[in-house]
Length: 286
Image 1 (cartoon, rainbow, N blue to C red):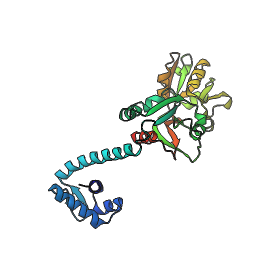
Image 2: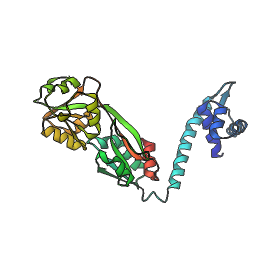
Image 3: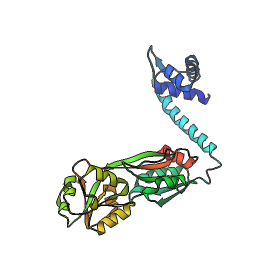
Image 4: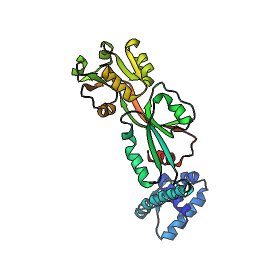
């Protein structure tokens, strides 16, 4: 039994149509029909129930389909391993992280990747978000895990894959009257006397969408510095619940924004035209 027959069978079963499968597999419809009939003869059982519009799997066809999907996946993995066999002992992936909770997002994925490819050398380092493009273009990092700014523009060479999204909330000093509220509105923050601390990638967005005086808006290009500086200066800090939980500052409380706030999206940045097999597998796992 040739592997091509399994590809043809999987395509017909998934598309439930011989014409669509033939187009997807780049062969003529009579040819793919012939291969399926040949496969059925080889197995000694019909795999499809055919009608004028589409096809469906027989009970035995469904059992065969489940196993074929596993076989094709194993075949693709074998091809990938063979193709990059000379690189597997020296495959490296350097990940630049931004924010306290960054590693939590990739932890399960990287663990699975290392389990399957134990020789892959995966390293982590802290980076500053303002240097996304330079860090990647200069080869300092293969991947940067960071926040997405509403106003951030990156070169065409850089791709982004979103992983997690959540709204920004605020961390407030316990002595601030706003800390007693269940949730805080932008109006509350605008009317407060406290300075407001936010990531520099979101400063322009906050200035455009709120009436907070520019003199009150303080920015940092690093999440850790943002939380520490905002806490020391007893200001209101825009951050996420994830980061607030990691920061664990007993003198401040986290509050959700009651009105529509700034969304915080996290994901990975990487070069579109890369030749790093570890990065390729990481993207497959996400």
